[in-house]
Image 1 (cartoon, helix red, strand yellow):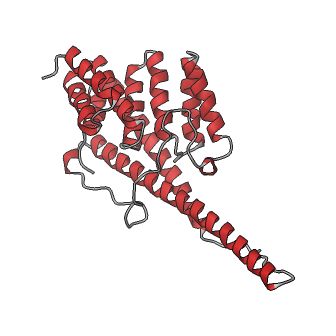
Image 2 (tube, rainbow, N blue to C red; image 1 turned 45 degrees about the vertical axis):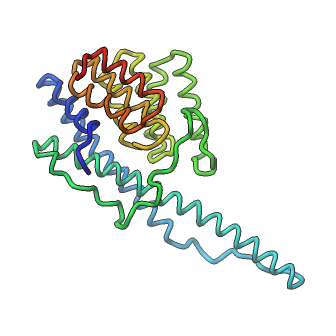
Image 3 (cartoon, rainbow, N blue to C red; image 1 turned 90 degrees about the horizontal axis):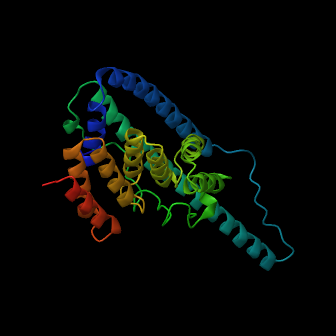
Length: 280
């Protein structure tokens, strides 16, 4: 895991705190790390259960004729193929999310222990092997839009996201921030995770909590650095750092917007923000 501007930005947020606040944040962060490790353990146990049988096979290939039996076999093959693809997607999603979380935990633990974060290597993929081609599952084109395959979302997942987004759009920032935080707890590893963190950042910005908003934007970008939400999250992170007085880190982060995502609308906004901050 190479040291990225967003990782430097996270370090800048911590260093910017007064000593007492930093100590309190360390305690809170350690508790968060224990909680996230527990979540990862639960996800791994769920995957292990997927590899266990639940009883006798329920396949029914009976029929009055050869043609009927062939048709029944084809239907069963289609059903099993669809289930296999869904389970494969779930496993890939857990691996991607788990690997991202482990990398984040490694960075935070080294940071808390006073180690050299520049010496961190590439994070080992959860479970070994390589990540699936294409990396993380694609996010919706815009926050609030369902993913293409709705079967990949848990029951009520899209509805909960839409309810939180509606609160944000109506200006109910406190309610929106609470709903997005609850969503993250209820649906770990969701395909909507990056959009959730981005919108939670917007809600926190609306409440005037710039520091926590910056953390939410960082979580959104680090969770999916190539998704549709990534350029917006990276721009908002840079702008928030500027408002926090972390000018040098803000300039570096904003410069990354155009470098990583040339041609997107946020590039012009990032350059305007850099000009306002008098970046070199």
